Length: 502
Image (cartoon, rainbow, N blue to C red; front, side, top):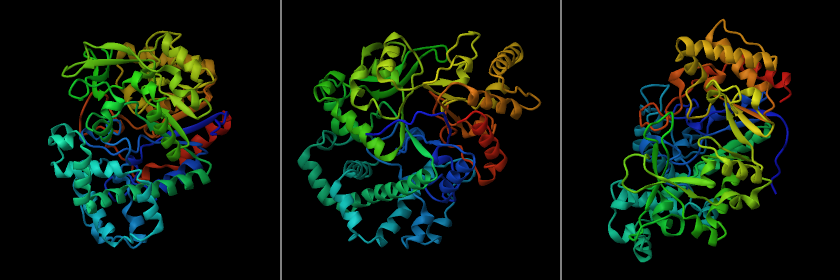
């Protein structure tokens, strides 16, 4: 049984992909270990990462083609050199990115597997560890899907030839027999990613730092899970294709709502299995992480569904989810519920039944309502407080984007919050103001505070992780360099931990 440790704590949100490395993307190598050391020097107890899932179109880890897979882009080449599986010139001569601040996902897609195949050619396949990994078969479906994707020119499974599209068992067995080497390679990518991740996590845990993973509620339409299990998991039409797609209705931020396109679960059918697939999914997540944040938690109470073929989320309907019943076996597990968005009494009752901490986000606090639940003065103990999430602009960019009366009103409200908390409110520079925000959150009743790295460093709009409902070259691409990890910032966080007993 996993027990939740009830004590005040603090952490940093940092996507692995954003870490420094010489591979064009953050990896599970030296940059990650150095970041753990930096977190330790700051007395942080949590490192929140985004999903470690493989990415495709749009580069979003929340729209993965394999919920059952791991992102092999994170494999560190230098570690493979130490094992004798690669030579430095086999990857160092490649121009992985033209901008050290941005991930070039196209280059990762084109070249990462090409380099890893050289490592696979040198790999000793008689190793007992490798044989046990294959025997377990945990990543076989991922490998089969990747091999078929390549076979069909990376087209969506909905465009494959009929027996493959419908996952005909004999057809798939014949394909696997004919492409055994390809399947073995793709399983090798998962073997390496898993091994490097486990080593990094063990290092972090040894330093007293727990890893918070992130679980999207939905899987992508073009994914292993939808292809193989759509009739068992999702609401489908008479052809067996997903009938409804997920999203959220129009709101103050988006007139058309957000149409995500993910298939929605057939909760009545899942209930008949005792929610087996979901329980196995949560169990597997806890094999990778110490704490899990589940995205769009309100969708377990009611979820918004839009007909297939719709171009916006304007016309949809709310349908019932499983509620707290899904989580009855996980009450003592360290789960954080992302309870943002349209919150009603149903969601509140579900949150109370599970007992999970919800999220409070500073960036949502200043709408003129003095009882806004995201105002730091309103926080209760059982919550996780954020300056912003991976979907918010950095606090600095938010402040700099305010004009005239809006800026004045914000600063009056922020000063009032700081006075109420007896924390300093310094505005000599924009960095001072951001640091005042971070200290304010550390002072609150919230049991846990997590600050995205861009807010630790008071970076601006350039460091935004993602802008929801957009597909741009800027989303998910920002990276940090070694010189960003200032010792002064670590010392500052350490002082806040001490001052506010976290």
